[in-house]
Image (cartoon, rainbow, N blue to C red):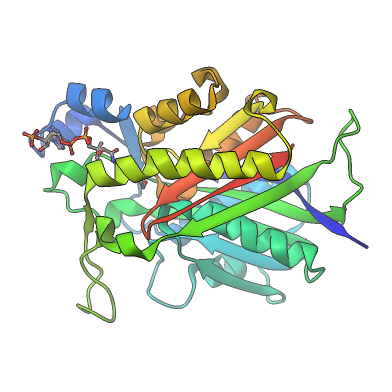
Length: 327
Ligand code: UT7
């Protein structure tokens, strides 16, 4: 039987503590006005001491399982996208697996920085279409606050912590929406270009410095690549499915900068109100930003059954990608 991946549940979690721009302005030479105008960010959530990426991931995963109406024991694989694992090894996904009471199946992490959720979803989709698994938990979870240089105003104002998760189910590829359209993940598109590794990176690592390092970014350059690469991968994704931008109900973009999100909408000829935007409250949560935004839009009723939804992201590597799905 030919199979298709269908997202049957989603969930998300944000740490309790909120850090406003005003609070950051007391720490580094910045202002609320600069941050809002240049990025759209007003606040971010920051994990508490002793609260790790795995904890955020587990909370999001439990909500996604409840939303899907399945038991953790139905999960065959956990794929967790993160740049901020609890430890260099083992994979944070295995901690989630244990916390959910699972000892079967398999769990591993995926590292593609801010594109991590799209990469993890693409891996899950391919496992499912190959017939190897029935239910996959795909998670994006980050405690980016732990790798920020809190004295570097050009990066510390941009990021936040959080987690989002989806349950993906293998279903026959004849699965349709009520209107008779193919339902589920229609395609995924991944890219990277390692010539640009230095534009966005941490200045440490187990094999180089023996330390974790802090985020370093050539913001303007990354911005320039984001606008070009996102427009190109969205065009590729729509063309692969014979769709035009006017047929898209919602774009759920990675939340790096409101100006990038609005620029992408303009390039596609879409009005900004078709973009799901959470950046003002969440900031950039890297691999968690798409599933956080997706969960919000599903739960508040914006994304409804039958809607055509496009996910897109770009991040360190450089990596970028998109996914097209019919909810
Ligand atoms: O998630 C992965 C992908 N990431 C992205 O896509 C991020 C892409 N880049 C960006 O979003 C933007 O480039 C930033 C928001 C990071 C920066 O905005 P920008 O408009 O490109 O500013 P800039 O880096 O060119 O800096 C402009 C000025 C500089 O001052 P001078 O040299 O003009 O005097 C900076 O020093 O703004 C200064 N600046 C700040 N001022 C106040 C940089 N950070 C801050 C700050 N507060 N926090």
